[in-house]
Length: 156
Ligand SMILES: [Zn+2]
Image: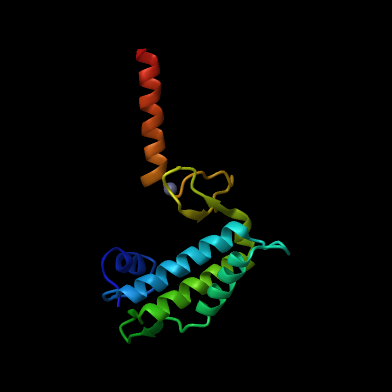
């Protein structure tokens, strides 16, 4: 069961309809998978001499990808329900990570240019020159900071 911010993210990602509370052990597993995926993406494709930490990250993501997936059920009224727990969320995230690493979209994977942000995103823009994870957060912050900097320079 998941709650708080992790539950909101799970719901927003369309993984589960009603995530429940997240116990400390499940939170630890979730953070470990997140770090393994991040380490793997940063080092991908693996060099023959890749260090053991990256190889362990690959093993961890592969293991998580064998977990069950969220259960989907289409109701007669046409409503899709998605149920499961932490295992199902981790299984879905790990499989998506493996699909990304092994697919054509990996070439368009970018890290947000905001130094305070650690988000990764797939740049599907036509020009392939997207710089921010999202305009609502990092893009607008950058624009505002640049505007203030120009005003200060103009006033000085
Ligand atoms: Zn960002």
